[in-house]
Length: 401
Image 1 (cartoon, one colour):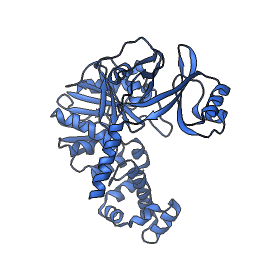
Image 2 (image 1 turned 90 degrees about the horizontal axis):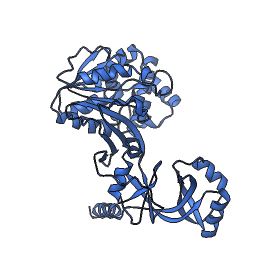
Image 3 (image 1 turned 180 degrees about the horizontal axis):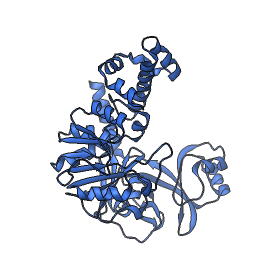
Image 4 (image 1 turned 90 degrees about the vertical axis):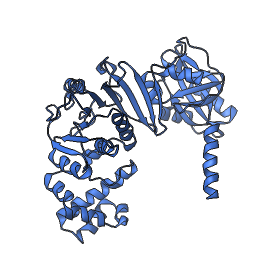
């Protein structure tokens, strides 16, 4: 976004025009939207407003409301649920918070909403203008995170090094901005710091003096977050599943490392648990064991439920072979509506194509490798009955109201 567009959007005229736009414009395609707006605004203003309408529609799908946006800034913005959780932890420390890479203010607005003194730093001038408007309660400065104009020693710091510059997301920390080693130094200089990065970051880039958590929202992995300083548990790994608010750490009891044969149930951990390396802790929580030391699928003889894992009742277990799997599906009149895989060479969509059309009772196929043998578990997904009861209670309350 250029500076002139940002200046218009933060002006009284721009904000007033944006607030006055009819909601019906949101549903128009970009071409029709621009045409409609040019009936009432000069081309420059119409273009700026059309972009905001389009971006706000996308932002609304992510739970982001009422902010001035740029395409790049929206792409990089923290999910509000993730930002709120982080802000609560920072607020508990009772320190002023400085977001050294604040972007459009996703984390900064959550910190300000939590009631803590907040300041933001942003290198890009148009983005800094939008952020001042987005988070008026925060002190806003323009500058380079690598050379912050703030004293960090008595503050809590948020750092999110840029991983996208006019191209695909990169996983090379040496190419981050600020560079990974600089970001680590800044984090260690603060009284408390959280350094955000991509959830797929390689283990070798994770320092031993940090607490590391892997955060998932719904089915989507959102970030890895490294905590330093006050309140950080050095060396701890944590899986975080939102919006459920469920956590699991490496400090909790874990199951035996010895694998066991497939039992009556198989459990498939969420991605945050596998990335955090707390699969054995999850197994202990479920009363389950490992199927194979190299595979995250777990097994047990009793049904158990936790938001960190999907539960499946085992129907059949066979060595993998397309003809064998297809024959068993047709004999039992099973239809694979869900295909999951771990340590298995065939993609679910490719396996579905190879199996062809099969009709019958909907089931799941869990494809994996156990003790070196490609294996398929035919299973039926089982939902937590207590969750169903709670859903029923909410429905009943709604009907009574």
